[in-house]
Structures are given as C-alpha cells and as structure tokens.
Length: 395
Image (cartoon, rainbow, N blue to C red; front, top):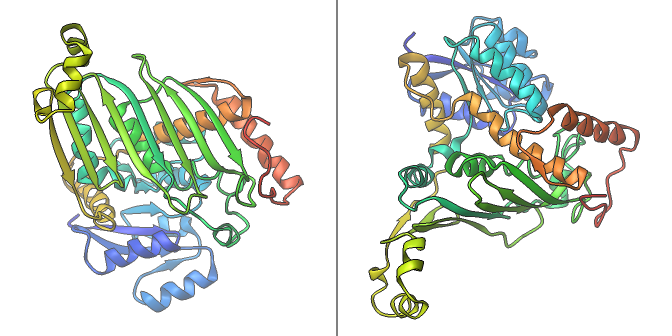
C-alpha cells in the first residue's frame, strides 16, 4: 500500500472539511476513497462536488466495498463506537472522531476489540494534541520543569452558542441525540488535554446547570472540582452562554507555573528553588522584596511561547500521523484507546451532578448508564425543551 484510501462516514460539516483536505492533496500519503451518508441531500451534494468518488447510502456498504483502507467517523457521538467496531471487524483502520462515545461502557467495548486486532490502526481525532503549544506544555510537565503539580485551573467559556444553533436539529442538545451538552459537544478536546498533560483526577465533584440560559434539556454551564492522587486540586469551568468568553489554563507546580491564554500564548515561570525550599529558607519580606523589585530573576526565570492559529493544520496532521502509522508503523500521537479518558471524566462530572455527591474514578459504569437511560426515557416521554432558567444540577 502506497497511499491510504480514506472513507468519510458522515458528510456533514466535519466530513466535508476532511473530504476537501483529501481531495486537494493536503494530506500526505492519504486520498479520498469513498463517502457515505444516509441523508439524500448529502448524497446530492457529494455527487456534485466529487462526481468521481464512490458514494454509499449505508456505511456498511462502504466498509464492504473494497474502496477504502480506513474510515473516519463524522457522525453522532452515540454511533462512534458502533461504526468503529464494524470497521475493525473488517480489518479496516478506524479514526474515530471525538468524543470516542457517550459513555465509557461502549467505549471500553471498542477498545477491547481494537486491542484484539493490533494489526489494524485505531486512532481518535484529538487534533489539539497536534498543537505545538500543548505538545510543549506536556513535555515541560513530564520533564518536571515546574515540579509536582499542585493545582490545575481551566476556564474555557469561548463556546458561545445562540438558541438558533440548538434549534437547527431535534437531536441537538438532547440526551438521546448527543448524550449531553457542552461536555460532550464543545469541551472534549479540553478534557482530553487536561488529563493528557496533567493526569486523570481520582475524584470529581460538580455543579451543572441544565437549560440554564438556553431552551435545552442538557447542560449549558459546568463547574467541576477535581481531586488528584497527590493531593493536588483542580477546577474546570465551561459554558455556552458567555458571549465574551475566556480561555485560560493554569498549571501550578511546586517549582513553577504555566499560564495559557487563548490556547495561543503560554507563559512559563520556573522557580530556581522549589516553593518548599523557599518557604524554609526565606522570609516573607525577602520574597516580596525580590518579586516586587527589579530582579525577580533571582527567584524565577520566565519563558513566553506564542503560536498562531493552528486550525486546519492540526486536522491534517492527525490524518498524516494516522497514515504514517498504517504505512510505516509510526507511533500514534492520539491512539484510539486514549479516547476513553475524556469520556470517563465527562461521565464522572455528569454523575456527580445527577447524584449530588463526589464521584471516585473509576466509577460504577452500569450506574452511569442507568442514570443516562433514565434521562433519555424521560426525554422521550416529554420532549418539550426545558425553559431558560430551568432545573439546576442536583435537582
């Protein structure tokens, strides 16, 4: 095999972008092999744009066509594991879009099948892992340059969505259609980066608002408190109703601090001694004199990293890395098995809100699924959207 023939399953916004990248030759070692979508209007659009590319109304037909070596799943979240498994069963390489699924139990089944077929490449579309800024931060943390982590804080409220966005389709912002709100739609990349760089917390306590500022049934406002094994704590805040949104990520270590603004600029301050060493050898007056004076470098060094927009280039990089793994065995930066971590974190945040208590990770997956199904059934019985200012988290 000289080039990977990629099949696009789901010709919506994402599928359309990926097809364009591939058709324009922007992805090295990968070409557009076929497209699948059950929507007749998408079929007409694909035929007009790509008349020479095979189109299938059913993704199973695409998988069995012989036209593709790999597929990417640009479909609703609930279907990612199902389609991924159908591809793997047929020895077709699977690149699953984020999130890997809606609940860990279905993602675990996907991971187990993939583990049993190591000759087939299984990846997840975590394009933010291709951002050189976050790659550098992961390296800094793993190298111990800011010491042991004491606190993480990420406020990511740049996801403003008007009511019209949710009204585009009946499946949007529903338990049965998407499996949640901002946690499963907009924020999966941040949940992945948080655990990829800082590790998974062991406990979560959350306060979620459902239909708080939008007429939807799922969460549009999230505040979660994280508790790590070493005693470190964290806060994760996100929402879809902040039109002036903030993106600020802080990682405090015992030997430094990282501050990221807008996912484009990072300031890294590295202490010359650990905070504990400073506490035991310096007085408060000495520290204040140095930090507020002309020579703060006596205490720390500072480095500023700035990167421009990485949109598009990150997505292409994911597909190129995926192709390189298939053709040459190059390690995946985003192995498919990693997808379960962000889903687990989102599930824990939801479960804490539903039960009104702190949740330990790992949690009872059957309990989570039962609680999710309860909300799906309630939604079926009463599909009327929750009015603005509706029920809060623990109610």
